[in-house]
Image 1 (spheres, rainbow, N blue to C red):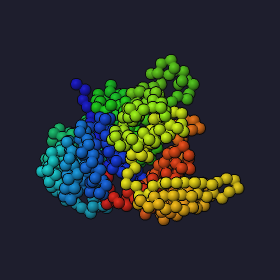
Image 2: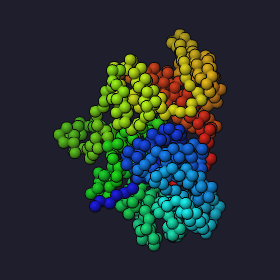
Image 3: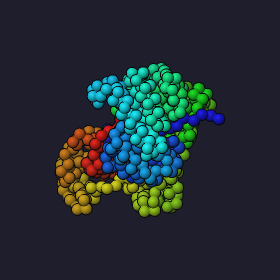
Image 4: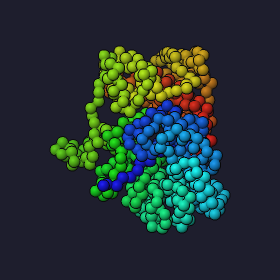
Length: 512
């Protein structure tokens, strides 16, 4: 029987640490449900001590997930452990993930602790956690820069204390594949009780080697890979789930292992995460990028037309990239809409479906055809934006070559209507200036981008903005056939995300 590698997804924890990628609870639940459909073995749902929002997200996800293991992160502190255990209580299958720095660099400059203290603390906290939960994962942070002899000692102590998984993080993406493979082999040979636990790896992409290092670790005997959808995460990101999975699947002849992932759901999952986080997937991204199965060269085109295997080592449909898409219109019914939304990964209540259906019908009056991207935009607008302080009620813009651009905006703020007008260098600038005037928001626009969701002159426009305020960056998105309206919605969405961050401030960050 072919050996399986566990896929541990940390999109909702490490992935959310991408600048501006804060997700609300409803968005996290939708992603978690999709990850379970995808077949991931473990979902790291959050870092409960970090904020009330993280705690609530872990609880809500633990209540909904049935097949995948739900994981919560905690430092080696009793307060962290207790908070994580409380959040995990509803989970059918649960795991507590403990981490503690072990490299001399971290010990000297960050923790001001001696090796003996680290060894003692790791042991004590694993023992404490084990009294309350069966599955405990331990991560020696910055393992790839830790003295190997001390790393072996810490790992053996954690296993003896009761850890069921030991994870080797390349926290700053420092290792090279040959070094990391050698380290994993050394751990397997020198840690006496390593065969009693699952050996996991968590690689960062600072040098663009996260996937390569993860695959090298699998060759050396690691049987769990921690990764994120689209490779999002702290700094340059994490190992990309879709790349790791398809490398193992496509090159089973080389790696001799596979995963339980339903690869045909990789592309829909990638799109969902991209839309919710506002982090676009680069066109040349492996597996899920827009150009991943495109052929420009005449030689390549000739080969693919004769036999696809000449220039395609995997098929588009194997990752959910089939070209067919259901075309819905204003005459389509609720049942067809629900079925397509399910295929896209969205599980909606009857009330949510009613709201989406109303928007769907309204859009159908303006467009002849409604595509998958349109539906994703509607769900993002109607369902995933919760607890909004600001709501856009009205927008009117006057602009032209001989007219000073003017915007009149009506907003609802905490249930009360506010209206004002303002000027700008253009219609979008005037709109943003008026919104700032009404909300009294002190924010800085860091990025503004426009994209047509589908083809044709009646396509919906998608606007993404990145705002900064008080050291926090958030991404806002808006969609509408009118690009100025889409811009206003994106700006208001970003302001609401800033309010969400104020309500649930990040107290500490969990790094691996």
